[in-house]
Length: 548
Image (tube, rainbow, N blue to C red; front, side, top):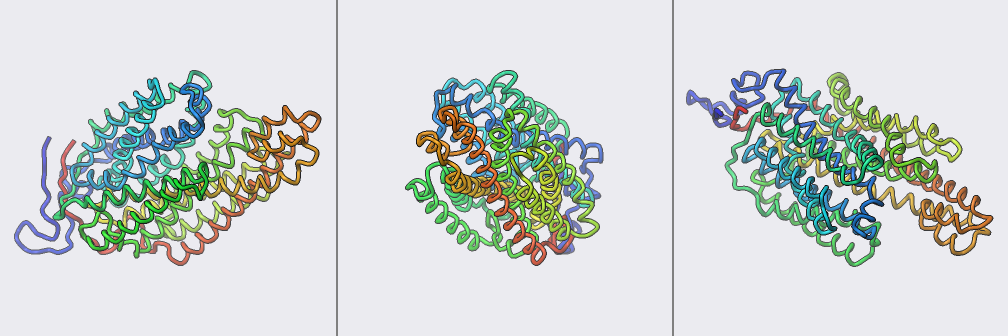
């Protein structure tokens, strides 16, 4: 392994000062002797996307196995949700600190370490004999995922030259956006064909492939910094993210005014305020320089991702019970029904860089947001029990295209806003924003759906016995189960539950349309102006480029 140290940024090896000059030996500089060629860059992109797919598939995979987990571990619904959510919680909490550590100590070692931890934890989860072991394994999986996810994007931004970076980020974004649906489909197939324990075979197989490709092709890079690691900022960011994500995950289950929910909100808010205050004091030595949010690119990209991923997650909360409870489909068929939207999203993510190069990132983001909002409006206006799947398919396709067009330039705007020595942090910020958006969308749109359903079904329960009526108010799945006890009113109860669900659906969709309309106006006014991938007047930092 050969190590080539680049000269310090702003210093010519001949002795003449040259402020702002790039680093000749940086891995992605055009004239870098160790820069990967086009073939190796393709292999690098495949390697990091395979690693990313392992992480994304594990976020959504266990959702299809909730009943199986409850039976296998004799666990309550609350415990099952913790088995699912503890992975997301640990992943989101550790993204920023581990992304920064990867920048300093080497992205390749961090990626390999994360893949190893993730793979071992997935194997333990697949063999877990008890709830306690499963929870510990899922927690450890989240730690490994937090090492992997920011590094995959940081490897792209630090390896690919500027003219290719947008296309590579588009592929990464497509995998990140559509990979969850593909993971759910494969997971549902495994649950139906074998058992829930086989869900962990897929991520383990992906980890093995990613490790082999990383060892062979991915170059190492690390950034030299003149500042000590921001330990206080890292710790306060962890507390803030844990507190706020906990509130969004547990609020719908425990109640928004429950003591645990309010405590989590207080701890998270205080830690978030402390984090911002401390980072402003640290300035250039901060873990995340919050002053950069004044820039259009970072602010616009972050807000867009937060909203788009929130709406996407909320859509899934609405679509699954529609397919299963209203249309009576299986989990596998319901997941397959989402594939057209995922395919459109991945295709649009790949096309977005070309469109952004022609019309600019702001116009591309605005077009995507407009299409996604139109898709939501179409689903809200056309959905019906009688119309079935065809009543929502056009809106799903528009949503997929719109999200793909908006996500790629938003991601590139975030990574372009931070300097090269902070690309692990930039990537982690991108990922944290997505996780917050997902949790926020599930909590808010799910709450709107539930409230709309309860309000609508009350007026449709005339003549239904009190017991089944009370059960039906809890949700559409409960209503279908209670119909067996409703006697002659069984069919009336089923019809009332399905029609009430559609009413709740429309409430959630129209709320999503309003949010997307506000985002559309914001992006038109404050969206990124310069082409993405080109940080404004920012010198390249010193880089240690290490051949694979």
